[in-house]
Length: 453
Length: 158
Image 1 (cartoon, rainbow over the protein chains, first blue to last red):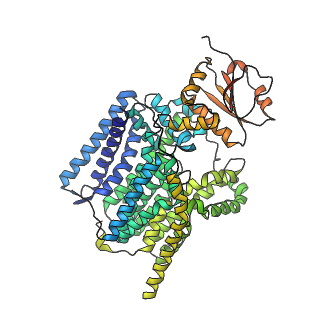
Image 2: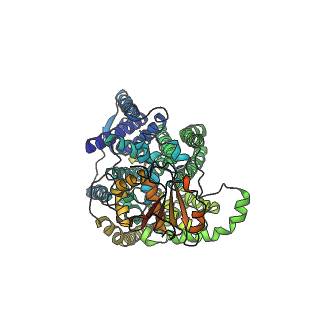
Image 3: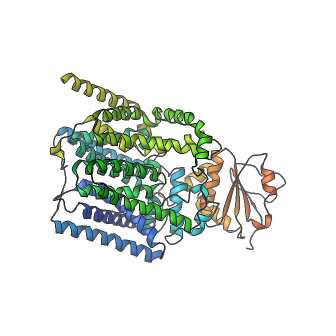
């Protein structure tokens, strides 16, 4: 029953995500099948994990599983009916020439290789002790994490305050497989990559007007060692790559909305943006960056109210999770102190060391090759273009890195430098796909006629 | 302005070429290393426990042992301070011992006696030492694996 259960769980995730995607894009006469599949996985994993968390507060066991399954099917049916009402049709964009065919085959081959390779590795330290642990304990407790897990000191090492986006996607697989299976659960991480690469290709193509460029960028993505080879990447079950995919999707749709004014793009942005803080606590910083950039872009477009409504779901999720942690008497996290001006004044002397460590990490070829050099050149190109959306894209790469670095001013570790060296590489991963988007747009020039990609 | 286009293409082509030439020798071996399997439910945790302690199927054996401790008090896990392998082992023990309450205490050879003196024997179910030797005066030691020693405080009745 393990494999049929696994496929049923994945199917329901896709159905729910596809339902949400179709209800967002239904009014388009032509639905990009690749885009729907990518968003189907991203939004489906978000929807299922949220449903498990919310429904798990008042039911458990088979009732919980059945309730979430019915909700998934209902979302799918709702989306499908919206598509039929709008008379929209699926379309599979085919490569237009030999170069595009070759690049598309390379992208598919890379996805297949990473899917295969991920089953050859165990879950890494964080993958096991920060994320999978929550799914396992929830499974053993009928689908909900016991309150004693949050409030006890003993398992504070597993960061009980971290949000449940990925652990509850894992839990969904466990509920359907009938056991916490650490081998098969790893399938979700290459699936996030499988959603990332085509989505990156699509967004670069849509924003630059060149499909070959999108495919080239997607083909280069797994060559960043930190994505595919270094602990923290997709092979070891960490959530940093999934978080980076949600950030890419939210950023990409924000830029598409700015460019076209199409409300469907701001709806897709709202859905992806809301899930950014649901994947990892650091997602709140990325959410704030997106909110700031979106505010700037919406001012220029005179559609501030429209934009504000799009960040409400994320705001509700952030507040809801914080409230929940208060209600379960979460054991206080000991990695960072509460920011204050006094502490800032005391620790401002750390700044030089902080940025020298970040710079040393950025120039570490075994982690990044020369990705950051290329991204730096791209950001210069984007700034030199003097176009607001391109400057915003450059900022979306640089600002999170600066903000992440500044958080170490409040690190409570006995050695903040040790804290940095253990966590900075994973934090930098969050902006890698966004960095590739910046590289793609720096390389290409916009052509309006290919917007329908 | 054709030369600007050529310059643009030359710059990006050379950047991508250098990027791939540095990355490929790092990414390639990682993709090729290891083999698939074993296809087991506790695939990851068992692999770590086997590597760190030599215990096969540790995710099943260790909780069985901890269940036999009987008492409801927490299991105190001592790990060596500033030793990531010992800390990781302590956390994996914390992981598999659920739902028993645990407390992980970082100690050095100098501080272990002081930490032990602070523990009330009737409030805990056992002491576990990960990659650190318990003091000689502590009796009833049970060696569970190559770097893990359990000192049960009270055994449950069979």
